[in-house]
Length: 554
Image (cartoon, rainbow, N blue to C red; front, top):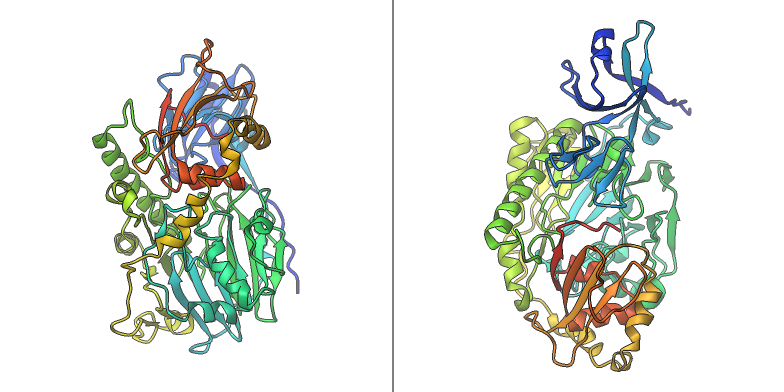
């Protein structure tokens, strides 16, 4: 029987009449002493605006922005994001996000209430009580990176299959050796979930092999603003059964199995996560989401899995100039990885899943030309995160190895059961020690001599096609060799995105400036095929300098 679910209102903070009367003009930092939660209230004469003191990016705490002379902005202690609390818009990165506002109400005695309107949780619709699971009825097998093979009764479901080839052009390669029967496992699946368009989740080399055997396999994706399979036709991969589903609605597979795709709160246009439920037991996979479902997630699920490693960005390793010394970068990476570990540990502590598994971070920069990145882009150790979680909670943790299988029924009944997690047979190869670079580099290299690059007219045509303009930013693009030295005969040009012009010199007006050196094979492959610049940036195929040091989100 369907249960009606309603929006609720929660009082987050109650200020007495005296406290309300003593609010100063401008920014007020407030704390609820009972809950320890922090809030920001902005007062402009009689107008009041309020929000949680929590950055939308990764939940950091805001403090006074000493560079703000107007008394309107606050700065995040994690990544220096800045929020203008008079408008509730982020000003660093510019043109990016809005902060969720709280409702401010006066009570009968002239005190103030900060209220949060909570929409109903979509997973609470048609609730199901957990049933006993037989041993072997629900099994979760780790394959590689973010790819899990789930046996759910007589159905099989696979998450994010990246099992061969590189991701992000030639920057990422698999750390783990997938089980030798990985293709058979994919072909046996009843359905596949792909979380988003990034190539460590949407792997066309993997899907090409799958499509050769089962082109009609059902593949489910969320209805994101940027379609997951935006490049399917051009990829040449023949998949015929892609199902785009709405967010927050149960998708029924059979009488016991259903799933629901949710969007990310920071990147709703692209990132998704998923809840799978079998006989009332929930499996939560938050994948790469920065704030999955805006931070509203089901608690006490049977199994939770999330990313953990960090290092999935060109920042700061590919940057130079100004503060970006090797010492600064090393300290920043060390600090950021620790922040990420603490953030994930706190999330697990808050949600209290029965079992937690860190995944989606098992990649390596194995191509010899990326030796510097491999040595400097230090990633978190899953065991370190799991030990941190164990210190603060009773959550059972699982560090997966390729081919290892978790039996959910056994683990829920007795987490100490020696058969709860079956490790791969002794002697199984865990880590890859060789990668087949050749075929993939050949594809990239073929773009270097492509006819379109013989004439400089491609530059204006390409940026006009891309359509980004009316933004005060000037970029110098330099094509380079493997070592980021100018490529002989390569292009070196300026793009002024304010009017989409291509000047010979930087304009005289005040403007932010970036210099981007890109390996010629990758930039030409990206241009020729209209691919995402994520291949350049996340794939470590560029070296960047910028003045001022601002993240241009747009």
